[in-house]
Image (cartoon, rainbow, N blue to C red; front, side, top):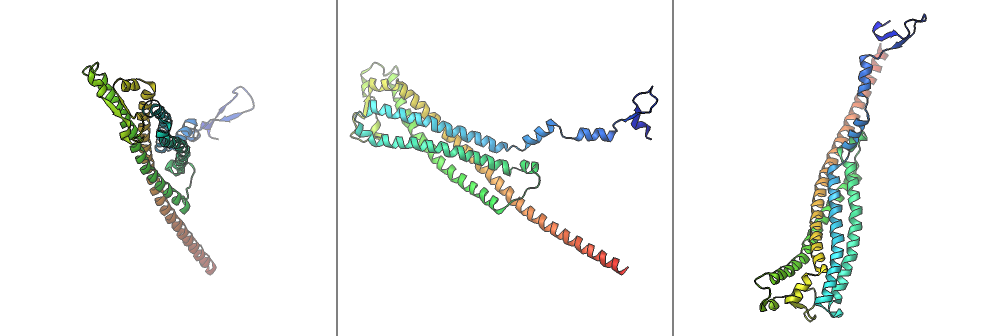
Length: 302
């Protein structure tokens, strides 16, 4: 009997009853068993934080661009109809184009919501931490092909969004010119003088309405009244936010491109390592078979 492992439960009883005391090895096994904190750390280690940050940035940028751009386009049409082009036929084509762009915005928002979720899922299933969580990981040619397709598609979308970012800066430039002209009119040097009425903005020079549109050109106090309207103020700032959202989307796609490229490289290396391990396991199995056959032959001779 190991005296150190037992002690009396009831010292005064006649029947000697014992209960075991945990040894150091038992205590170590209890301490080494994973608890709630270790499980949480392990789960958090499987989160692809780079893909998560890129997804949040992409969703935020697309939401800002689509939401603010949609409202700003509607405000731009209202300003043109009320002040720069009173004849509906003069800006009919522009109204149709803006309506088409609003429908395109709906499609962009839906597509990037789905595409962002797909890229986030791809990040979950290709990060090395998740592979460690789920044990042995096997790569296939189809999986590597899908990862390469995502790299190519994200590159194309990034180039397209660079064009969208540049295009979204055009209305910002137009509204800034109108706003700066209004600031000149409001300045003390020109306010109240006869030269105020000679300061004008001709919206026809930007090509959004034809040259025969009436009036097309606004000067002086009438232009100052346009700048003081809520439609102008709201549309100007919404176009700025939409342009910033397009820039954030470009950054998110570049971030996604770096992540996908690294994941694709990891899958390529993992496939090579997998092939090496398969060959090694096959050779070891053949070596064991040879050794077992040689032992059987020796036993048969003896």
